[in-house]
Image (tube, rainbow, N blue to C red):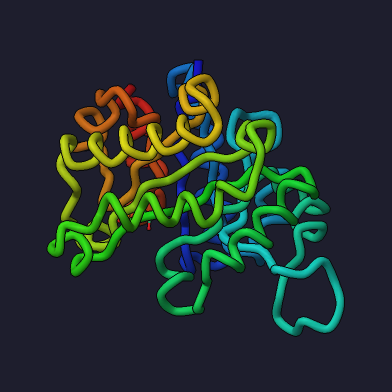
Length: 251
Ligand code: PGA
């Protein structure tokens, strides 16, 4: 049975003090979420070391939002996978559309980052998704398939045990426009089929595929009711502990 996950992507929000309070609130309420739903919070780099002890002992796991594509050395401003591990991080998001769009994150770079993260023992939440232009041109299946192939086809079935896929249509991120449950489900089913073609049915069945893009308490239930949607990657709504927990309770 694949894991159900609700992950919060805090993006570049909150000071460390605000972040610690938010993490405390999430950890305190996490016991009110269904046992079979895992919770992850992806904080800014600066918050990780302070948030780790706050969520210890709760079901909440810790994630970064990115990592460097080198292991160490003269890469000013970068944060390595070993640094993330050393503060108690268990996951990193990779390939978020904001990083692809604003920081020239290419699929080639994502292969390197994914490899480094897995070798360091971090789980990876790999984001894929089409933009509005691609959706309107009817290319959404092709775009997502290509992103999956370009990155994940460089890995093994064994590696896939530590990889979560997050489908986030760019036009739905932070816009209030959620993909309909049907729109999301058809892409999720397609992603699972692509994974099955490469890694076999069992690996595809076992891979957690999250939906992200204006997911909130009011629409989470309908989205999560879909056969191939295994939870959410939550941006805006993860900044309020009550909303984040309510989304997890949508199961
Ligand atoms: P949103 O962001 O929930 O604010 O749309 C989702 C994400 O970018 O991960």
